[in-house]
Each structure stands twice: as structure tokens, then as C-alpha cells.
Length: 375
Image (cartoon, rainbow, N blue to C red):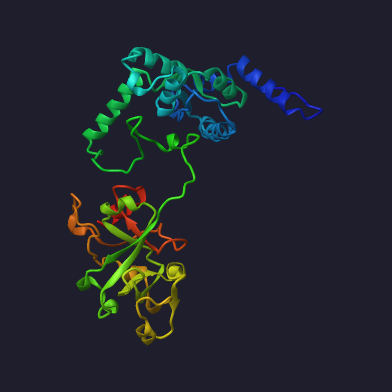
């Protein structure tokens, strides 16, 4: 084969000539047909959604994805590459409802279910021509003539069939995850849906530092004979405190026992928090003293409240200490005997708060994960 010689570098022209050659001689199709009977390597594309325009990130992703089928082709495999379209998703429904000027409640009233489905199917395939053009321009080899489309009955029935096979093999189990939920749409939300414009806003919210009373008989030896001990836990979601079932610490974080007085009741108290956050928690009206005996000079109404750091230890030394339920309205419906204790979590930091995280598995993915690990 004779290759063209180029005297100047004109990449767009070179790309155009190569694409024309591939198209004229059906090179992609031949890369499959000439390997009939060879071992197969099947590639199903993770499908994009054609209700939006392709971006540079799609070009990058497809460039990377194209490497593997080409490599397997060069190894002698017959590589069938099937394109696909992702047509399910809340953004499509919301976009159609906005265009039609309706809400979910109007479906079946102002517009039939069939009409609504037809509008969604039309909207979701709106930019297929643009996608097909981009696919060809970047030299991405994939069968666009016979793609799988997720709204087709054949696709959905296939998914259900696969789930049945997995279930029959005992590979599916019932579990629980924490999902963002939209009351308006009446459905859970995926991470992709949460990345839609306008989803996140910067707001000022109330934070709370709560005291959790340790169960004395579960305290380790180094915390015995220190009086009543409380854990100071910080939360940005105080409405979840009734659902608290654990307190999470960082195993490698340094913690301290502080003896001081409650700024509201003026009564003595012993509290545990992260060493690096003592300065933040005991600022303003608090004053650190170097001797424990200096605490005795405090009287209710004094402008400054003294505090004394009694001892230091690691988060791992606190694990499995039990504490009294903060609001004893109801117990967890599963494994209640394992609740209300100190557990470990890698997400705990000493940037804000107390270094002890109020944990409510019902309301947070991180909370649910560490609680499940601790059972």
C-alpha cells in the first residue's frame, strides 16, 4: 500500500482524508467481518444521553474507550462494538414537563400517559445527529446503525431477565442505602441528577454541639475515676439528632479530656473532644489554666470560665465506649444492642467542630457506611 506524502502539517485535512478512506473502504466493518470465527471480544458502550449536546469530556472518554477494542482487534479478536442511548432519567422528564408547561400531577389529566411518553422519547433523542457526527469526526468505531436504546421493551425485558438469573444464583440480597429524594418528583435522585444546574446553593445554617453522657461502666481504665464524662459531638444537621445511633471518631486523631464548667448551667463537667479543636470550642469566655486546682477559684457569674486539659489519648482508645441515648423516643429496629457507642470513621477531620461526629445512619451515606461496618 502506498501512503500519501505530506509536505506541510495540516491535521484537519489528514483527519478528513483518513475518515473518507475508512468510510469508502468500510474499514470498521471489515475489522469485524474478516475475523469471523475468531474468539470474540464484545464491547457495549456505556451509553450517553442524546437529550444534551456532546462536550469535550465526551471526546476524551470516547478516545480512551476506543483504545481497548482496537487493541483487542489487533490481537486477532472479532470485536463487535455496540452503541447505545441512555433514555431514562429525571432530567428528561423535567425538561419535557417544562416545555409542555405541566407537572407530574397533570399526566393522565391534561395529557395522556401515551402522549407524555412520546414527548419524552422525542426529547431524549433530540441531538442524535450531532452525536453521530461527533462520533465519526473523532474516529470512534462503534455500531451506530443498531444501537441498544434503554426505553425499548427489548432492553428493559433483558435487564429484568438478567436480574432474574442473578437472583436465582443467590447473588442478590436485600440491603439499604441512603438516597437523596425529591418529594416533588416522587423519586430518588442519582448523583448525575444532583449535578444539574441550580441543585446546590451556599446557605448559612445552624450548627449544634451536643453533649452525650458516657456509660461509666464501659469507660476504659484511663477514664475511670474522672467523674461523669461527656462526649462533645458537632453537627450541621441538628434535626437528625433524634435519629442518632453512634458517635464517630478518627482512630488516629488525638483527643483530650477537658475539665471545666458548663457555660449555661455553670456546673462542673468533663468532656472529650479532639485536641486540635480545643481552642475553637473553648474560646471567648473560656480561659485555659495550667493547674487543675485553678478550677476551684471559679464562681458562677465570673467573666472567664477556666478549663484544664486532664489527659490525652487516641481515638482508637475510645472505641466501643457506650453512651446514653440523647433523645430516648425510639430504638433502632435492627441491632439496637449495638447502638449508642463510639465507632471509627476515616471521614472524621479536625478542621471544624469537635472531632467527634454525630452519626445518624438514616440520614447520611457516610453515616450508614460506618455504622454498617461497626455492626
